[in-house]
Image 1 (tube, one colour):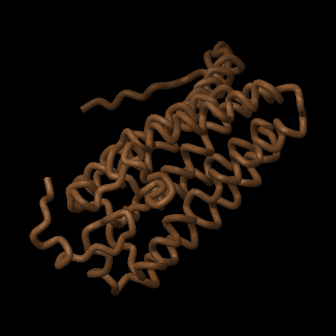
Image 2 (cartoon, rainbow, N blue to C red):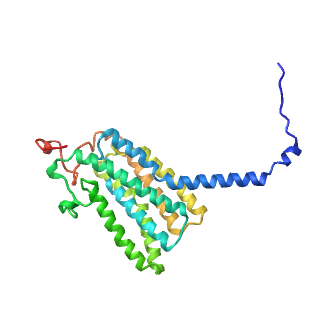
Length: 274
């Protein structure tokens, strides 16, 4: 059997427009990283969404994670109007808001199933302060977010030319996002368990935060972005540490959820749940 060899002459290689090839590669990588920045932040919540759907229980997931991200991304969008940063980061904020609404929908739906009718809370019923961000209908969360957005949109429109205000709102947005893992950290500590929390979600948080930090530095994003990203990485590592510390507490945190997280199975006996 005759073997054939492919011989590439040096003169032929010289005809290849290597400068253009390198440019195409750089352009392709740039678009890839921009796409990852836009959608990468939502990827961790795919794992948590699947975890909640599988368990039919959202007690292991802190809704305050959604609150932190909604507040952070609303403020970050307003920050963009005062200090234009990379459009990919603006698109990321929009994607994250949509993602958080989806997470709220499934978490609220599951929490509602495990809560007796008399114990269900809603803004429409007047339960704003006594059950803040622990309501049992998605409408209440949407109302709260719309009021927050309207207030800060009007404020930003009035103070759009005030540099101190714009810088402050940018820092608030990014500090809030940087601490998004704190509610989950506290929830795990209170329950002494990470049961119901998606570990792949936290690993994806860490991977995404590492990638974001590099992207912020490489693109010369405002200082607020990459300082807060470093804080996020630290919190991610603490949460992963909880997974190791609480690894034996596999039965904790399985009780039905209510606004005060204190309902037991016995307290629901005879109550109507749909």
